Image (cartoon, rainbow over all chains, first blue to last red; front, side, top):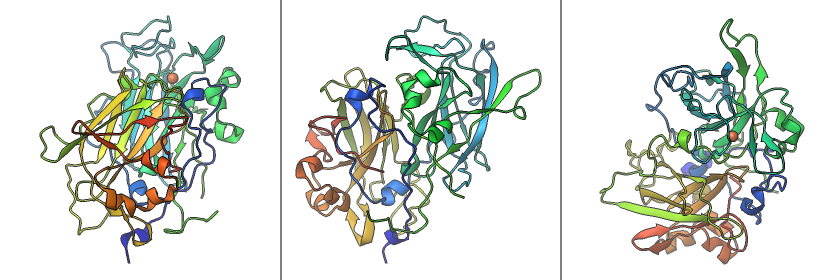
Length: 238
Length: 188
Ligand SMILES: [Fe+2]
């Protein structure tokens, strides 16, 4: 028997946005307009890079300690678990984050928002998940920032997350938001996720347990990657 | 316990300083005897270049083995030093480029053999979820003919968007996000 017959694919994700969401203007020229080609998951898709091992330095997860001084802004702790679609921890897997500073400005040369840069804040971090699938970052709460999508357009405060999981099929780039942001209803990127329940999964939770007295507010944000199909090598026929 | 996945969101335009802290475009050292160059440009639906995308690749080694525990075929040699992962931004001309080796053939469903191919992910502003495609090689006509994934793309014109061109000593693979010339993307 060939090797392939022992392989189980990954379940497709239902909560994702469609490629085209015209309210988010940049999708109009960049969203595909031919249907996706359907293929079975092969050895190529159920394997994937174990990238980042041996690369992460001790302070990479602490965005408040990458410079001489401390950054301005509201110090926060963001922690959570990376789980697969069956609730199992995704261990020893790279999590990369990036964000604007407390004023809503990115270090990126393309960011033209006239808000101050902070010499003590870059806004990039990474870490590997531990044996429980847990990650933890210390940072400052990013500011909201304006963008050119439409008249008076502002992005709600968010942190960008990049995750690998265990396979090519589980690669995910997403954004984490903060609870109760009044900009949610005006933001087409957040709203591109049409199912309110799925949208809710992008919002972190304020957590008093994670909050450290006299020091930093705590937010929790679990990230669920796609789960494995339970039946090896057979995919439902439509 | 089944849990619903966290939805995808766009990478946005401001990722470079976080995701390119090291050069990940060379999967093998320059001067590697079997090194190949794989390069291309990304275009949008108006035919304009996309200068702010991120391209990632994933591939087997030259023998056709993935550096991953799920590929446990011990009869195919594993090269611990070849991770098989690359990441490159598009530049101001919309171009990306990788230095790698041509992957070997890998098994497909039901005892089939897949032609040598590289998996590709594209992320960009205006792209709400990862676009996945495959690069096949123009000098592997016979292997391509028997490849089950290529065969599943019925229309030959569409299928041809998945095969790189030989150009100036490199393999050229342009990616069109939208429109007439749109590259085939897979529902991975
Ligand atoms: Fe952002």
